[in-house]
Structures are given as structure tokens and as C-alpha cells.
Image (cartoon, rainbow, N blue to C red; front, top):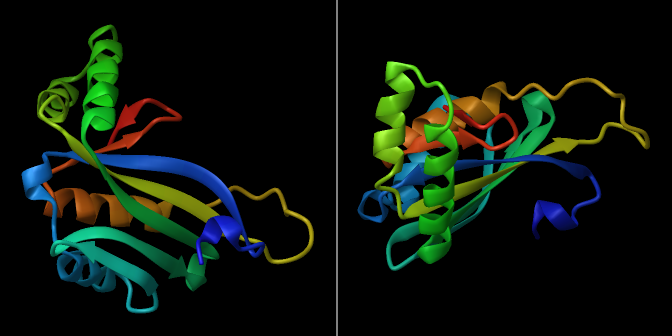
Length: 158
């Protein structure tokens, strides 16, 4: 069951990892990378297609959050990258950001990372959700696929 359909979890944000499709890892690699971060992360619904990682659900009980990660490829990603490139070229960028933008320009695949917060009671408590686990997972998966993380809410390359 998708976390989108689970009343215990509330959707918070979507993040992306953009990469070249030939760097798409297999499911075992993604599982190993995530398990190396924290042994108490619970991975479910790990799927592969033709030996390549397709999707996974990650429950993070220690920070009351969860993630769903899924693969997207093709023209939709290429269009998104073209639009992002135009946006970033109109901004003042650091040398590091220019390097990331060059790498991003080659991307034709992405992982969508949907971030959820587990509700503790009937009402939200209004506290800010700690994105630490999410950012760590993004970093590790981006390293595996030689990708670039993107926070579309702040238009930041991670």
C-alpha cells in the first residue's frame, strides 16, 4: 500500500535526484546504501524492473517520517531538466553550482522522493519536520547514480 493511501502519514514534500539513465542502480544496491545509513529503517515494497531499481517505501520510525522513492525516465525528465537549466542560468551561481548544473544538463532520468510525516495524534502538532534522514538518503543515492539532488521548493541543487 502506498503511503499516499495510509492515514497515519501526511505528505510533506517532493524532492528529486536527477541522473543519466545508464547510471540507474539495481534494487540491491539501493537497499544496501539505505541500510548502511540506519539499521532501523524499514524498507518495504522494493521493486526492480529488468534488474534496475524501480521503487521502494522507507519507514523511519526514529524521526516519525517515511519516504517513497520511484523511478521516472524519458521525455518528461528531459523537459524538466531543460526548464531547470533555463531557470538556473538566470540566477547567480557559485562555481560548485555551475558544476552541478553542467552535470544536471546530461540527466534523462530521476528518482522522485516523496517525504511523509507520521501523525502522532489526531491533530498535527505544528512542529517542523526534520529532513535529516531524507537528505542523507538523497546524498547516498545521488552518489550511487552520480546524480544531482534537487529541492524544488527552494530551487536548490543539493
